[in-house]
Amino acid sequence: MNKLGTLARLVVIALFSLGCVTSLFGQALAGLQLAELTKKLQLTEQQQKQLAPAIAERDREAEALKADTSLNKIQKLRKISEIQNNFRSKAARILTPEQMKKLDALQAERRSKLTGH
Image (cartoon, rainbow, N blue to C red; front, side, top):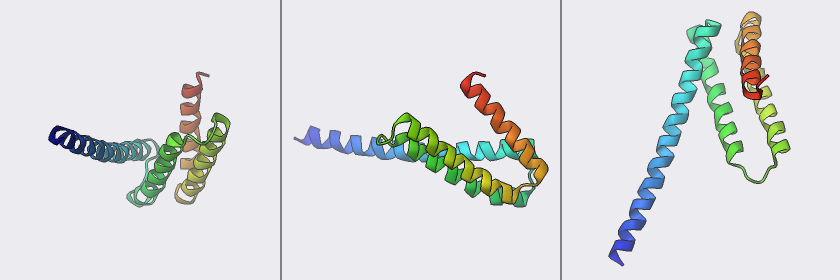
């Protein structure tokens, strides 16, 4: 019985640690995305501060959608499109028109890589 209790505690600790690592990985990924956008769009410090929460929110929503097993593929595609449109709307309030053109080009490039076109 003692071995079973120890095993259960180890599993709980491992799951908790995995959750923390996943969270940290998500934060690091958002930071990398912001760094890439900063470089490619030449963001100001103010724009970086304003855009960071929008990137984090988009990533949280996308991860939650990925984990959602109640939706089929078509529903998920529609929802991810909605998430991306919301992000784009927030970004448009922060970025200059020229930066938005560059962001649209970056996103189009990523989509073509993902779809193989």
